[in-house]
View 1 (cartoon, rainbow, N blue to C red):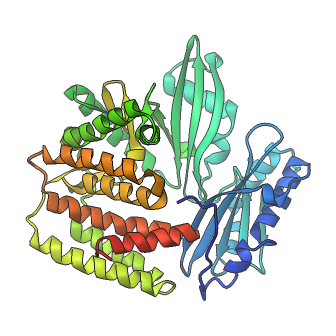
View 2: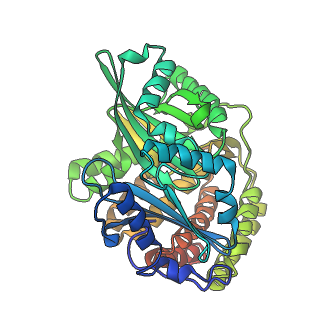
View 3: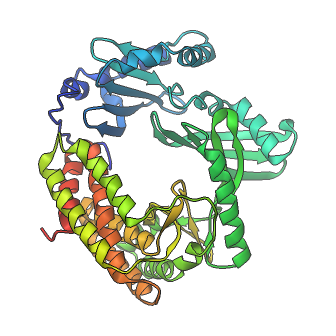
Length: 452
């Protein structure tokens, strides 16, 4: 959910400073002060673009701004509002202080990369400082990246040039994705690197390698980015980019006014549904199995905390979960297959005559209808957020469903079940954005399955 736009501020008894946090003289003004010191120039607080908001009721709220720089990448500052004194505990840790010192040294001691407001329980961090992502200083260093890619590609570091290091998706305290452009001899290639809070990338590397090899050996319709390396010191998984790929998101937007793009998008959505089983049939050992019952328990735990802040929303979601529980007990058991875990059109690419699939962080075993249900639910969310796209979304949805119906192994009742379950997921995520548009979207998504 886009964090920009009007905002609603809940009355959270554990976070009484939430309104002040977003106020005109709130956290953004402090972030601007930090950027002014780092840039050694005037920076207007209003120039800070809010790029990320994640609110956890009764626990914390994390935000991140990007402030334009006179040259190069913008300055990014994150702020975390705590419900207690956890921020003081974070900055007292030797690992955090060591990390801050190394970043301060990179700036020749001019910039203090963090600020903690004890009276307001807010911790500010100037990128690349992040208490949970100690690999960021490595990842943003051209010299370090050149050496790391040289090792991964098994070439001399003197032949490597890093011509781009761009953070394309940064979720403070959680994860960051970088795009690297690497030149070696006469070749030029792009890679994407994911930095995690822990070493999960190492397991992911092995899993994604196995999936990539199986898909390649089958000669079927699907491709995924192949892992190049996992770099432990940065907790970073490096993936090869899918070259010359066209995103389904771009196709959807083009299809609004371009009849050729419209036909192409219909074909892509239909082929996605028809051939998804090729991806699902890859047999990978050691993946977690997520049953419908486990999924419902997970969502119930999520709404228990939200219910203290938005009881009407969670009442609606609770009714939805109860209905889904009953339906799951009455439907025949589905085959468990390889599942993307968060399948949507924004993860879908057209790679020549192949279909590409990205963002495979949540690979799991799920019912064969789980990915199709997730895919349709995200189209529902997109239509709610962007009503102007609704006609083309309905057309592409029809093409996807028609493709599903040509698969005899699909039970459309389970597709509808997983679609409704994913509405709960997106309702909660929209709620956590604290945008007014997100709150309205959350209410609409929660009501969809109940026919309200």
